[in-house]
Image (tube, rainbow, N blue to C red; front, side):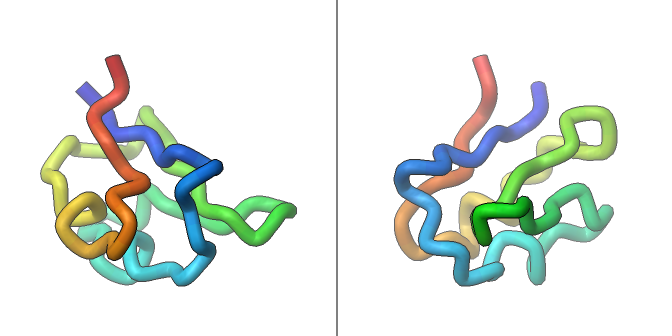
Length: 59
C-alpha cells in the first residue's frame, strides 16, 4: 500500500522527498509535496523524516 501526504499538515520542507529512495515524492504547484503511488514502495522513509507526520499509509 502506497503512502499519501496530508497537504493540510505538509510544511513544504522537502524532508520526505530527500529521504525517498525511489524519488516518488515531488513538489506540487502549491509548494506542498505529493507521492506518486505507482512509484512508492511503501518503505516508510518519508514518514520517518517528516517533522509533522504528514505522510501516512493510504487506505
